[in-house]
Amino acid sequence: MRKFFILTFVGISLIIFASGFLGFKYVFNLASDELIENRIIAARHEAELVAYILSQKLAKGIPPEKVKDDFQESIEYMNMENGFVCMFNTEGIEICHPLPEKIGQVIDSTNSIVRTFSNDLLELNFRDILESGIPKGGIRTFLNKDFREIIYVAPVKGENWMVASHVNLLQITKNIDSFKDQLILIFVLMGLVIDLLIFLFVRYINLKTAHETTGTIKPGTIMPPERNESTPVAEPSEKQILKNQPERILAYKGQKLIPVNYIDIAYIYTEYKISYITCLSGEVLNCNLTLEEIFNQLDKHRFYRANRQYIISIASVSKVTKYGNTNLKVEINPPSSTEIIISKAKAANFKRWLGKG
Image 1 (tube, rainbow, N blue to C red):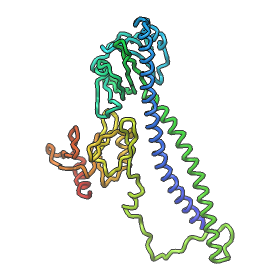
Image 2: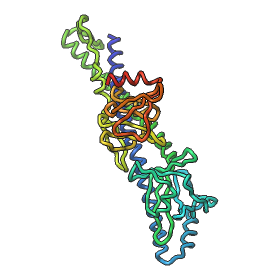
Image 3: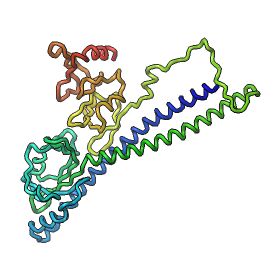
Image 4: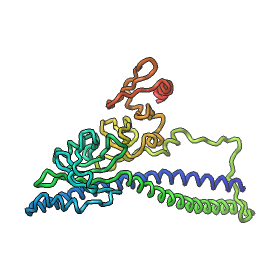
């Protein structure tokens, strides 16, 4: 009877913490995406507001040099930990910056690229954005160092100036990690309380049922349910196990969060540390999870980790050919931008997966 108590408690605990884990991941990912989206909107508003104020000063007849000097004085030596505002001209020259020593530096074509908000597939050289004189923003990746930021530039009417608002993605990541720790603590405490309440309820039901059945059961005794020892216990089927797994993933398109059903996914790949989901329809979205985190959620009969860069769906495989002496080349639909190669070490496993699927 004591053993039955323990098994009941352990079973309830596993169910609660499994469901809590899935709920935690959903809430955390949703909150993280919303935090980044809010910072993107804030960067855009900041750049547009500063550009508007400078434009109004120029329109009132204040000399450009005076406007520029006043702006430099207002931002000089400002705290840059979370982000900052600076100004370029359309020739790619830094003309205002919190660090005066950076004034006069020229942004060359090898400095950085920007994956724009309006089109996740579009990558523009930051120098080209400045030269265009058009308001635009995105995730900026530096080509000569491991650093990324949110950036938005807005033109100043009346001059060839571009106000730029920068947001440090590393600081956002630290804030998200801090939020994650707090969220884990809340979920664990909630799980323990719910676990205890359900356990007490089950104990009460068992006591009441046993008492009504025999009329002689002492308080504090739990009777396990009767079972014919000759009847085997049914094991959950593979379909039942997979049914409990999430069937979709939240992806990001522009500034919108879109749920994508697993059955609609053709393949998933990573580029510049960002994960992209390509649907069977050809639509491409991005996700803030790593390939490893995404693959852990997927049905391993339906999806295969081809290499460090690609996860492919069996529904997208159109052709497999030899590549060299030992490797395999996989052709998928919609086509991928790079070749998908299965190494010799994984070739046999891939064939088995393809046959089972």
